[in-house]
Image (cartoon, rainbow, N blue to C red; front, side):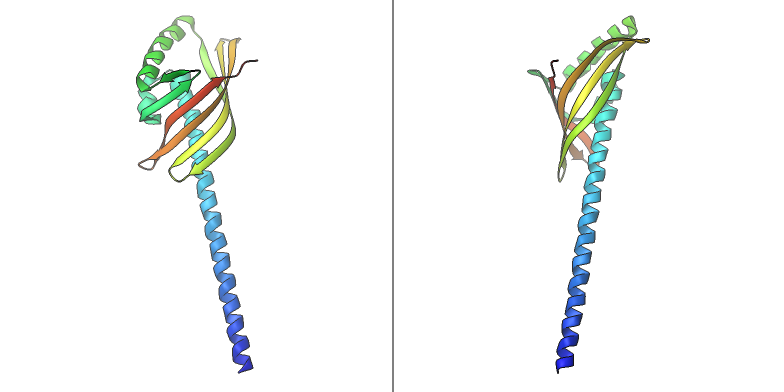
Length: 164
């Protein structure tokens, strides 16, 4: 009888350890998936800045923004239409003056919450003409991305200019 009890305790311990290992592996898998989704949204932010704000390509708005997108910048509320209007005007100016915008983003913090990711970052926009730097602007920004049919899209950007 003692041998049976010892054997049952050993089997119970093995099963318990196996379940714990399985739970830890599942948790690690979830954490990897979350990190991959956060990286995906960081890429979304970078790429949208390149294609929309540097290349001034208004045809990319629907690719990267939700239909109800808002940009809150220094007390001004922008939507997709106001972004599109700005890009059209700025593109004419850029073509006349022959300058371009370069972006550098430094990510500070990210929070994943099921189908929403919030990211805070520093954004450095530099306008150059040839080899000359015309101006560099620093903003403190955040982005809210939501999962829209398996794709991440920006629903909101919030931007505050950092004064030197």
